Image 1 (spheres, rainbow, N blue to C red):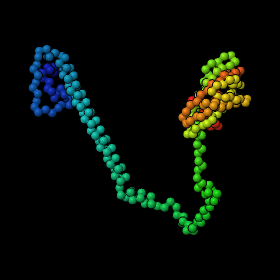
Image 2 (cartoon, rainbow, N blue to C red):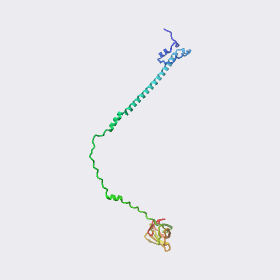
Image 3 (spheres, rainbow, N blue to C red):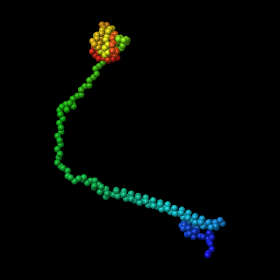
Image 4 (cartoon, rainbow, N blue to C red):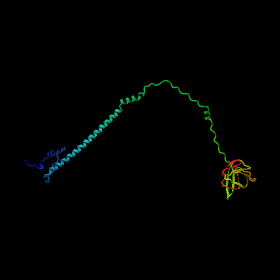
Amino acid sequence: MGRRRDDDEISVAELLRETGATPRSLAREPKAAPVREEDTGDGYRERLEQRAREAAAHQQRAGQRIRWVFAAGGAVVVLGSLVLIAVTSESSPGRQAATAADSLAPATTTPRSTTPVPKPAPTPIPTVLRQTSSAPPSPTPTAEPVLCTVRYSVTDQWNDGFTANVTVTDKGGETRSPWTLTWTFTAGQRVTHSWDGDFGQTGDRVTITAASYNATLAPGATVGFGFNGASGRGNPAPAAFALNGARCSPA
């Protein structure tokens, strides 16, 4: 039985063969590590084997990364080639010519009829419609001008009577002599006494005629009078007045 070999007598090549590690090519051989006294025991071989396995695993992982990079690059090249082939085939002159020929082909082969289709005769426009359309529009009625304004005010009031003052302003362009003012009560009021004008009443309609001293009403002038009245169902002011038959507006 041969003697046991010390750890120092085991070469690196034998260690790599025993552990299965792949040696790396180096420019020069590494210097042997100094042997220490504590490394001459039985655990020195196991430590060398562990280091060799770690170096082999590192090289294996590096090789896998390189293979992945080459595989990804090859896939990109293949995909780019397929895209280029597809684009080239779509834009080729032969395909374009075939497409143009298909688009220019007639939809049907039925010959067109050359028989002229008679056009319907135009419908005559009735004379009445032409006359109606050419007639001028009717004029818009204008509002009647206001020739006077009236201010009606109740100055005193009690249970069954009241006192009122009225002023009239001529807005027309002519002198009124004599003048007459009319209105209609709406709640059954009655005039019982008047001054600066003579009153008359028929039903709800009241007429005030000018006195002898204020019979003339010039354009832009104002005349006034007053009266006492009796009320039964309230005392609302009249809504409409007329001066010598012309409409007045409330002031």
